Image (cartoon, rainbow, N blue to C red; front, side, top):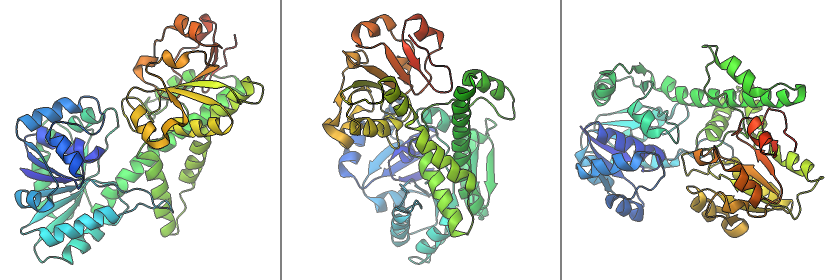
Length: 437
């Protein structure tokens, strides 16, 4: 099948590459000429494990193409996926201007029946709005389908090729038939495709992400309570997760959630609720708790240094909001950097993947180290903000030699408590006892 993907951000590029891998001819459209030219030459504009290999394979197999010309792609395609940004507006609601602008363009340019698939995360009722915009520009028949993505950054290729389920919202039998054909390689292997109405499909994405945000935040609350009563959150987490009604995933405590989805989607669902005179009280609490959780270690750092971090040099391992991505949107590292700098500390950071994105955002407000151990040279403490695999088994002996103080504030609970203790480090993590030297 011939398919157009409009938008080559995280969702669009992974979706387009996956659909090409499934044997389709995919035309990826983006208005950024430089980006499109780079992709034509095999340059992957985002970091995602295993994406580059699949990307290059499908370019070489002539199944994956890139263009800035929407009409050219539309004329070749039966199906058009919208993978456009829906950033939060000033009031927290999702900004649909990109989606509706492209819907308008499709209406003006289409010459035959199309299935327009909304892959972007959008509020309930967006499919209706897209349909209205297209219909205002053409009398040619079309269908608008909701088909939300459920990709985890860092595992997007794995998730895209082995999804837990495919959700499709459509009231058109013709469109359902088209979508069934696209996803037949998945359904042939037992992966379910769940058909529902468009509004339920749109809400499924928001509800899923918001529930996971609640789950993370609940575990962070439990972790903070563990510290008050002397319990160990790792033990509690294992005990809870062994109940198959709860499961082990998203129970890892830390310094809050971030990224492109959870903060935006929680905020958007809260705002959507208010428009219907409905208060998502649990989501409002989740959002407030997460804001505080992201910087919960700052007070612990201040306490360790007698109430002030002024003049102290803090090494920071990790800048991305999570491991295996270069995404720094809503990253806890940035919140902590901002506060620590305002309090007079100096930051030396290391993140081999996300460094350039941080440089573009805050420039030389902090220093950047070439390696994880280079960041530790004569520092007063280490702050771990991202759970990159290379941080999991460090050389504590070398760390001790480089650091002025053997002090670690771990926002991701990277180490069993006995490890820093055996190496003589002061070690403060989340929801567990503090190891004193």
